[in-house]
Amino acid sequence: SAVISQKPSRDICQRGTSLTIQCQVDSQVTMMFWYRQQPGQSLTLIATANQGSEATYESGFVIDKFPISRPNLTFSTLTVSNMSPEDSSIYLCSVGQGAHGAFFGQGTRLTVV
Amino acid sequence: AQSVTQLDSQVPVFEEAPVELRCNYSSSVSVYLFWYVQYPNQGLQLLLKYLSGSTLVKGINGFEAEFNKSQTSFHLRKPSVHISDTAEYFCAVVNTGFQKLVFGTGTRLLVSP
Image (tube, rainbow over all chains, first blue to last red; front, side, top):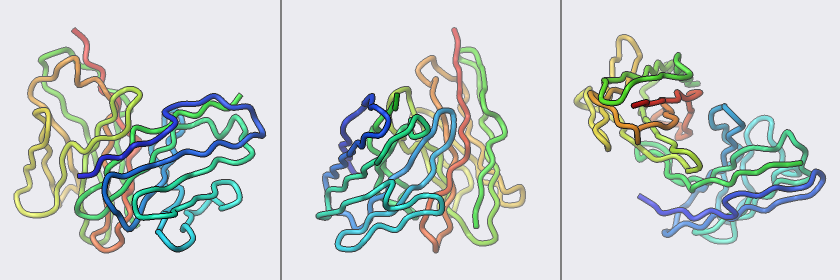
């Protein structure tokens, strides 16, 4: 298992601004994943962050809107840029896939006003 | 590609009653199956997983699930629920080769006294 610390845990932001979410893992991992959970909905994968290369974005998500950094094997950030109320969601960082399943941070609850 | 269907968006149940949360999946290849729980204002926690072998798997907090390949189902059960089991439950599937989790839309379990 892995322990994942994510911050901030929640924030209320003005539209047009940006928010950077941090994710720290207690062990070195190759891939980190960022998910969005819109109100009352399931998790949608935004992108996969690999250390030393650009993140891989899923369909419907672009780097200009959700830039990701992965400076080392235990840390990643996700920025939500030029926010609008439609960006109000829970953003989750996770590690692990495949047979081990995924481990999640506690999430960042973002409200854009 | 894989997909997951959780037919019940919400399941109300009385304390100490049994419960079953349904999950059906679709895939043309072998998969791993998971159940996650999300308590209010928290991230997701792995409840149990099916990789291979015995079709009945036991997880944390008294939950168990049965894999049925012919019905492509992985229903979650608990013989006697507690108030503290009130949470959102997500079924997830991953292709054994592709490594990306696909989540269902979730089932909200509401346990009342």
